[in-house]
Image (cartoon, rainbow, N blue to C red; front, side, top):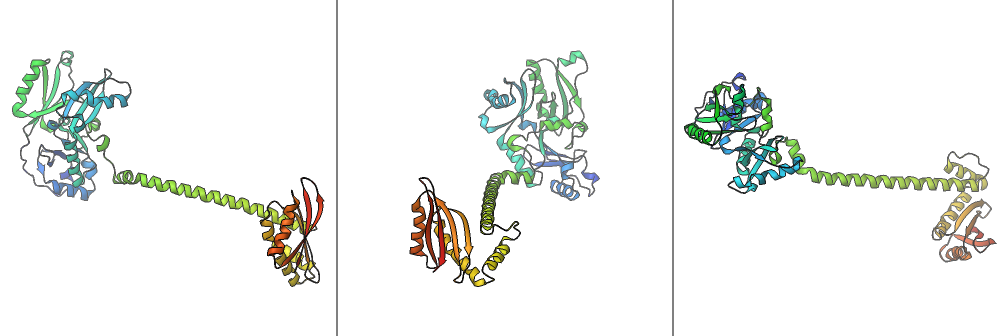
Length: 407
């Protein structure tokens, strides 16, 4: 049981905040101690570490009471890690006083004989520790049972290797015992002898190596970096940066928005490609029409200006006659759009005193398709007078010429 510590005076220097130990006591209170084991003012210590920018560097670990954690070994069969990790809670089910759903299991190591070293702590307890740490700006720390503060010293003599080796440190009324790389326990000092005698009566001889409290690891545990493998914060309790937490919270909306953006870009690209292809087709059709109307032109540089010049030359320089051509083209355009089965082969323009005549050479599969254009012109067209001259009629192809004049 923890004793109430005497709070030592905290010097306002960086040196005073080196070699610190941060730990939870059995009451769930966070205690920060200096290298002499004296309790410091927790709030003031954290404030100074934060101001120095050394909070993460000097306090990467917080120790938790081993009395609240079960450290044991159990045989778990299975070749794949995912299989034996899933089976681990149920291998321990009979030895637990509560349903396995109430516990957090941390597999430290698995031997070649399929013996798994495991730590067991209730979800309620580890959640309380993490919530407390988050409230004081220590959400980054790892949580390790305090029995692992004791350095483990392996037996030197061969006859000692068969014994049950305990490395013992007594600190503030608690005996911390480390039994190996992944095993240990803590008991109150007054009950230690009773516990030891009970173990010796059922197991082999216990070899106890007593160490000084000054040898306990602090929160930086520089002398044993392998202690990080004993962190209880695994699975849902892993430490994450704020950025990663935000990402975990918003990853699905961000993914959905990203997919929408990609879909929009793909649609825009497809539409742009389609418009580009359509533009190429229109450009080719325009050039083909220009060459049919003006076969003597060898080179096309500016099709609009060249067309305007040629038409003006044919009309004797009269802009009025050029305008007449444009009106006729605009007048017959809807007729041919409504009859896509009629293919235009070529167009000729002949200017005269009345304005000019537009000659359109066409072909279709049926004569009715050509007659329909004449009928539509008579019903709808108030500008152009369209007449049809059939040139060649076969069962599969009809060739004809439309003569278009202004009314």
